[in-house]
Image (spheres, rainbow, N blue to C red):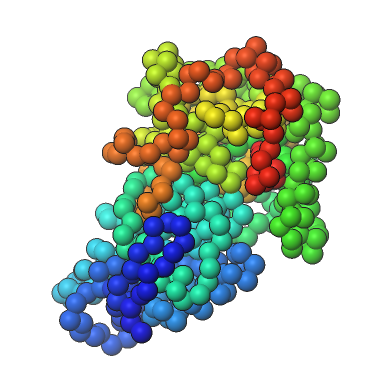
Length: 497
């Protein structure tokens, strides 16, 4: 049957129409194939990338269903072929065909949409490839939640629960992709500059031996403009967040344990329990009892920020902050929005705005401990809003600690800090934009669409702010004493970082 039934997945599913609207002829995808003539160009041609290793057996099931519904050649298993090779080959073929006057190739390139199924790391990988292509019109991307956090899909209305994998579910999703609207999203570039430690690994990400696709950083070559003689410089990027401190430490402990004993991490409830135990063991819920003050961000690093068109200025970090998050999207740790929506007073007094995903600004939020994180469960709850910046720079000097923990879009590592008079520098700056596809329940807000519903659901949070130290001490007393702040049964404590 070359059509779609109406599906239902809680996201406003609609009929996808004839499947010919999505299928791409072989000769577009394979340069050595014979050209064909179609009566009409597909109205929503898609190229699908699926990480078969994500979601247990779901990835493999999705690949099977998509290949049955579409042209098999337009569905790619990322464990077999990387997206950069696929897209470079595809766009090179577009150019060849267009130079020969192929009008079908022109129409398909103009209306092409991409689908990526996997975790946040997989989605970020594809977005990075699309960004690096620097196309005049980059294809918009829809994300299928097939990971643990699924912050990217959740931010753009695609949900965070792993999907069904049957053909009807695939057809329903195609219908949503066809009706989705385009939304621009900022990307953020990171450089890290350091001298090689005398002992231990040099590469920041090496201890976890992550697959190439999920590397947060890559060492720059000698010819790279960022290269500085005598130093090792790494470049990377992110779409969702960069974090440093105790939340990254707990995440690192979890990933390390799973790497050593993968057979113990096959059950989701077991995984969540292990994550919670690590949080307790490492002091994320009781840091003052188990960790020295050197774990505070203000003692680890000097932080500077730059506004758009401004100059570097020092950012004062409260002495109690032990975790700092540089956030691009309104979703962190499985759907929480640490920034919230600043009220009128905050906009006037501190020049803070809603967290738009395309305004060239990144939201900088701090947390004291996991109890502070629980404030996100309360109405109008948010972390300590520190700043919005176009660039942010962390400078680490000798003395506070020999290492810290960092995390980019869910991928953590243990970062060595200076043991002599040298400085480790991490600098985050706005890079460019790509285009996402937003579904009906999109949490993200665009400066082009200021009326987009708030991801927090509250337009003014002035009355419930817990940013002041004294207010926080009073607020902390409420936790455990008032039913308002007790964890609901459906809340996953593993995500409360």
